[in-house]
Length: 316
Image (cartoon, rainbow, N blue to C red; front, side, top):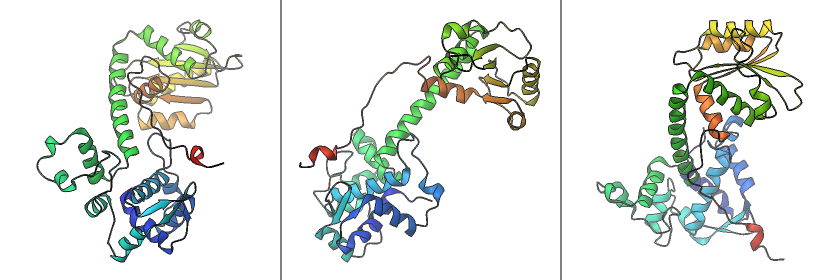
């Protein structure tokens, strides 16, 4: 299990105690062995899939030590311990974290506020009067999340709220419009060629269990049969069996069953054991796909997360 990023500060400082220049890559490998992390641990991603979690934790632990003057950057991706870092180790601290650095070094700057925090004030009964930045700092201290994780946590909360809202709307639209939404989504995901081509097939088969047909690719080398159910009730194995039977009647090899509800474990297991390829998309997946493909949603705000361009500062 990966420890929080603040727990990595002391091991990183100890690694650098030989006063040699160390790289981030080397640090990750050494700490991974020390902590006996598994391949699954090392391959765990942040929720956004933008970066692996352990790399992110090592980066932020090293960044805080640098801001406190315990480490200094050398060449790109390289760092070395400072006299202050040696001084910290000489005191044999049991752990090093944001609170330790802020209490000990007046010039240490918390990156969330760009000012030295009065850490004790974050733990008293006056937290309601703190400004937004201080509240973010409090979350870092208590939950030990990195700034990246705080941003992603807020993003996921907003996304989950939007998913729930989309599902409520989908459940209220008429069945024909729901089928149209399903086709538009599949086209946006790369199937069917164009809305015009795909739209001609929807709702025309009239064959039990099939609501539409869409091309698998722009050339129409194969087709995908669609079942779209705007349901509240959980969909069990019998409904999936009906769909499989309808596919067999069309000699179809591929089908997508989409619902605003969810599937029972029996239905999921049944779909996986079939020779024909059946993809089950439940309400949660449907809402996620619509958000990811910008269908039925619009961008309200955009925030750019930037990092320093180390190449720019390298002398020629």
